Image (cartoon, rainbow, N blue to C red; front, side, top):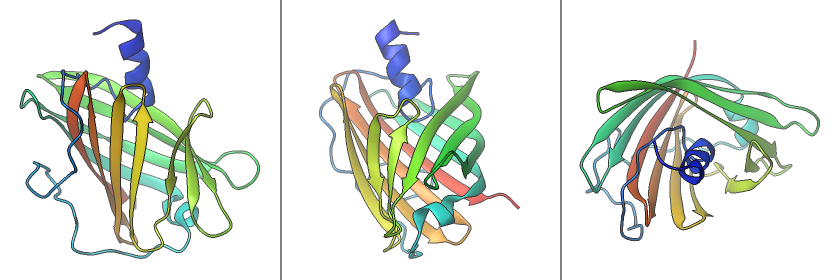
Length: 187
């Protein structure tokens, strides 16, 4: 499924493997784009401390749209934000299954959340490379991450104490995707 560079890129992006197709540059996400859980969400839940809010286990449902081909996949799994070392860092580990083209693939990712005293956080890839900042104090945050020739634009929306949504628009020469995720706190 692609060359070694493609496989490595999928491992460090949203949980994969997500097939990609050639694409034009990213367009600004808008309400006309397909999403099982539309954004922008009308309700926001202000979060004074991102790390405290995210700590724990979450069920994750994600729809992956290949906007160029019209193909669609679904990820279902869990996410856990657990303590990781000094300075209050949290390890964010997701794992589950991605169904794409009738085939089920195991999928996972690991990120690290570094809390800051003001309630915001830095998010890094597992290998320590920076990914994006996160500030949920208003209940919504937009992040942009250039990754080689690709561009990731994410919209985080906290909608309740036990639910948040994440929408990534990914574009570049090899892909044009929309990933829509809903996280619900595990009971």
